[in-house]
Image 1 (cartoon, rainbow, N blue to C red):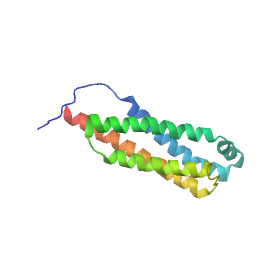
Image 2: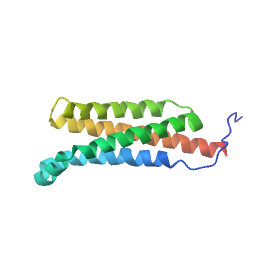
Image 3: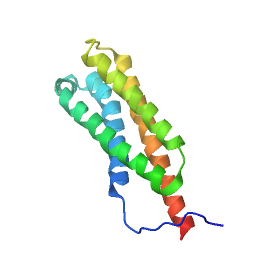
Image 4: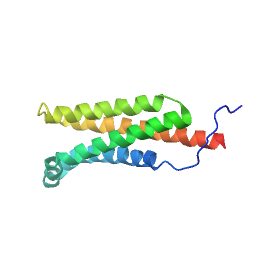
Length: 139
């Protein structure tokens, strides 16, 4: 018996944008160290512009939080995607803070940034999967 019926039929592009930004963040975090090793000139170009990383992290936080909360409240009522997403975001943010606040330039920080981005992306994808599953089951 379905106690909660989906009363609205509109698309939530913020969820798709949040997943895209999480994937973009992951790609950025994985490619930057490769560029630093293989192509020093291109790698230095990306390392110079820390504001790109800050904008991506902030965008993932704002849109990702919106998407995860919407998925939880309106669709699946499952907290696991939120925990996964915010755990990844905490790892990503801690790595970024270590770079800027403590002026640490360590290759392991790129690993932690990439891992945080991947975990946040997994949380977003799981949220999207649960939301889509709920939408199909409620019809």
